[in-house]
Length: 212
Image 1 (cartoon, helix red, strand yellow):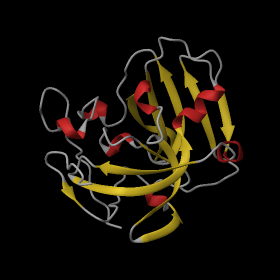
Image 2: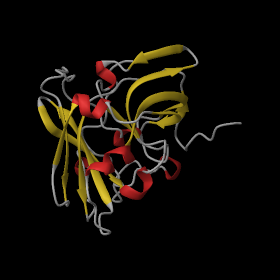
Image 3: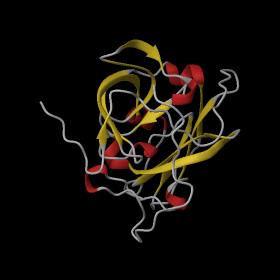
Image 4: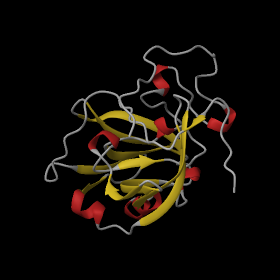
């Protein structure tokens, strides 16, 4: 089946590496994953507890705001919905922000997403991958090891938080790191929602580190 390339995108077989700030250096004993926000009780999970959750394998397409698209990358990870087992959500929880490390701050990066869009197999916290050119391998530190969120293909890839550290549950939609800097809150690549509604190109545009 032919793939639909979103407007303004170019297909690549490589997985380009882009990141903001320093590459996080994983230390298992110090690593935790926090569930918090508009919930009754915050939960903090260890690396072992997270990795003991059920695993999902899913093949997804990725679309980056810097105009590259990569089809058919297979990931193994933990579905977003698995983390809902640990929290009690009221009906008015409609959004989340997924956090990640940035320059030593475990909550320095975040991306906002609508909760209802994250219940499928295409919303994964991933730790290993493969494609037609690669056998199974752990994702590299520059790709977000030990845990990187991969969003559904209906979102640009900046919504895929690297070095994931937690989920904030929200009643109202609040901007994340790049959204505060002028990028779209909704970020649908098929509607080319790259920037905020005012249409101005933000400063601090994503930079390309390398191609893999």
